[in-house]
Image (cartoon, rainbow, N blue to C red; front, side, top):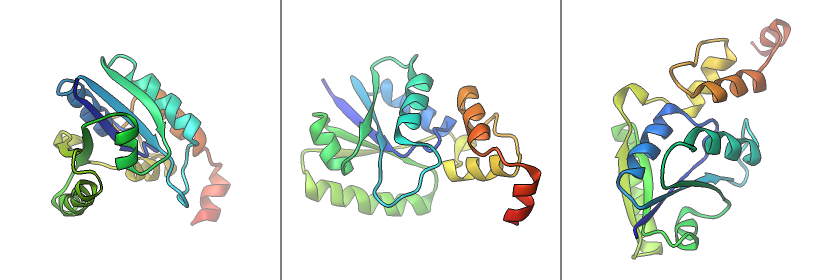
Length: 167
């Protein structure tokens, strides 16, 4: 059995993430989506909230499980007995950074492969972009699943006065 881990912040989960998870589930016997807790990083959603969002959005994807990831991706892969770490790509500049990361992963654990999966071009946006669009009242329907859209708007709910004060 070949298992792969897909560690990410998923703050929030986007359709780009979903595309990678869905396609990875067709390539590997098991895909373990690791919702990351990164030290000294501020998140819009708590780890518990992100876990629930990802679990709900991926419940219909076979051979996929969602778990918290509180360690480095290599340690996470080893803990999950995975042979592969999946990394998503959107741009050439990301490729250079991810290639360096894959080299480090290989130095840390030569038995684990890093596989790059690009999401479809129309899904090349980031979670940060989703939050920014939502913050300013823009539509994110085409960017995130419906249940996540509701949670993003609710979490970013600001009165008009608060928006003016933030400018």
